[in-house]
Every structure is written in C-alpha cells, then in structure tokens.
Image 1 (cartoon, one colour):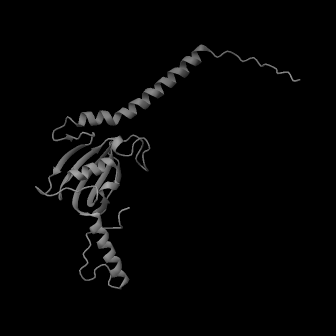
Image 2 (cartoon, rainbow, N blue to C red; image 1 turned 120 degrees about the vertical axis):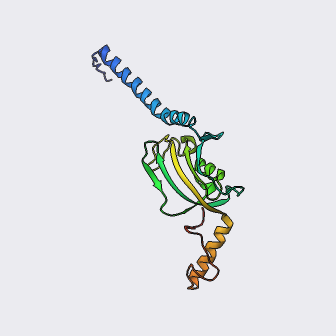
Image 3 (spheres, rainbow, N blue to C red; image 1 turned 60 degrees about the vertical axis):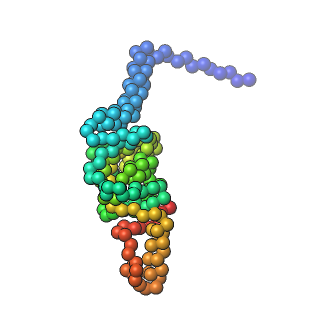
Length: 196
C-alpha cells in the first residue's frame, strides 16, 4: 500500500485573482469590440448619401451606372471584371491586373450578389459584411470577421457554356498549330481557364 503525501498549497492572494478576472473580462470586451467594428462601420456607412443596403446586408454605391435596360449576370454566367479589394483600414488585399473572369456563382456570396445587381459597363463600390465574405475563418491576408470593400467594374459577362465552348475551340486551334488567333477565334480578354 502506498501513501500519498499531501503538499499544502499556499493560498493565492485575493488581489491576484481580481487581476486575473479583470484581465479575462477586458480580453472578452476587446474581442467583442473588434467583432462589432465592421458592423458599426456598416451602420454608419448605410446612412451616407447614395448608399443602398440590400436585404442581406450588402451595401453598395453606384459609381458609374451600366447600360440602361441591359441584362444582369446570373449564377450560371462568367463575369469579366476589374476589381480592387480592401480592408476597412484601406489595405489592399487583392487587385486585378487586367479584366478577370469570375464565375458568378463561385465567388463569396457578397461579391456574387453585387455582380448580379450590375449591368455591363457599371462600376460599383461595394461593402461586404463578414457573413457574406470569409466569415470567422478569414482567408490569406483577410482576417477573421472582416468587412470588405470592393471597387468592381463589370466589363462583360457570358454564359459559362459559351465560355467553355470558346476555350474548347481555342484548345483545338492550339492543337492544330493555329494558336489562339485561329480562324473565327476571338476570346474575350482574360477569359482564362474554365470555371470550376
């Protein structure tokens, strides 16, 4: 049979416990304040002149209207866009170098919603709340729970099936040694690879 020797622990000073709990409370308050920062910005921003807020919480401002009466992209289209994405502190996290193809249904929900509001030739400034962006996970240089701001220009859009046909013709033309500029082949700038 073994005997356990009890080692008496000295009592912790009450002031240390108060400091510990005060630190925990302050850390919780700081985390809450950071999470609310984007929401507070959106609330203030929504009151500015020309800002439209959708039912989902997406905010946008029309910088340049698109072609009147022109159709708008749908989830099954591939949009050709120029864009710049920034955090609320003004830091750019992504920017297109040329018109970039984006499958409308395969981008973050806020960006997709914004594209579906636009007509060809339109330029919008868009504020995407975290829940319509990258949420609590964040992504790369985008921190968790970040509200995002995008400047978006919709250059053009095509149905995904048309883009895939164009890419197949371009691949066949390259296979025949004709290159991407073969007879009847006119790819839109930045058509890129087929949507996933």
